[in-house]
Amino acid sequence: LAQGIKLHVAIHPTLCMPVYEQGESSLVTAFRWKNSVIPQVLSRPTFWLFLLLHLLVRSLYMMGYILEADDEFSILFISWDDMKVISGMTTFFEVFYTVQCFTRYTKIYANSRELLSVCLDFCMALRLHLGGTSMPHVRLASRYCMASVLFFFCDIGDGGMTEEDWSELLNLGLATLQERSQLADVAQGLKTVKHVKSVIMLQWCADVTCCGHEIAERHGKVPSGNRVAMLSMLHRCRSLQSQVADNLDLPVPFAYFHVLNMMIVINLFLWAYGFGVANSAIATPVFFFSEVIFMGMAELAADLLDPFGTDDVDFPVREWMYQFIRMNSLLLEMETTLPHWTKNKADDAFVLDMRSFLSKEVPLSIPGPGDDW
Image (cartoon, rainbow, N blue to C red):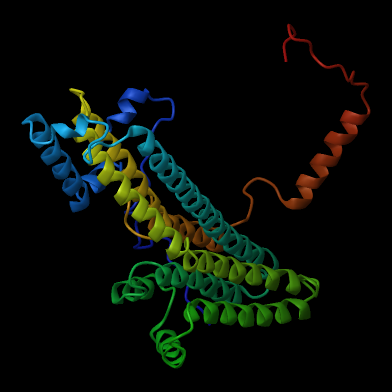
């Protein structure tokens, strides 16, 4: 009826989120290059375009070609009071956009982790209630539940399910060639429907769970109402998958994104000129770092929009899957016979200890600050 799940799974964690010390010095953190957005910013042609524009304006100003920029009534003059307006508006729009992206990012993270937790709870409940009467049903339902989660995370990643993903699932024993063929036939007729494979796997899991419950109920090992609780966990799995997919399909509207980028371009253009004609020896370094900050915020927000990729801020899904499969396999296949005492002996020992405790007069005093706890 079902194949056992191997504990020595072939999947290994390859992508991990960067680890850092929150108590680290601000100076050390500020000049940290690895796992930051600075390499992404410096790889953008737009960054160097604005920097070259600034250097060109700066060179012309220093050589005396545009000295009229110092004249308040000249057409080349730029007022920093006017610049403050557009810079303030751009800063507000960009910070608001980044906050919205991060809020969406944390929500997707919470739903993804809860999805794995609910699936783990489901497998634990299967083993607890049905393991004594129908272990094959427990293994098969657990395999379908885990396969549904893996199918879902593979589908929402870049490129969807690949041949490599299928080979890995087949090697793990989480899917069979016959099941792959059936899923392909169904998906072929529902090309416009997303995440079909994960939904079908949950449906198969529910069918097997009901069959296992019927056997357990005939043996009187489980109450009939327990089936509803088990199926509600599968419904919750499907709901969480839908929430993650819906959040990914609903980014910040393009109109807002377009206005924000237009404001950033105009702001950087004015900064490139304004700092170029400034009477300051550090105008170029100030412009450089201002451009890095502004474009870095935009790059960070773009990375947060899709957390299922290969960026440093993306979720370590492969590590999650590795831990998820190992934990589920351990709970399903480990021996639960306690080595030194049986359940009845443990109950008897607990009753004796409680009677001995209640027969004594124990002062209910709370130790003071100087007392030995």
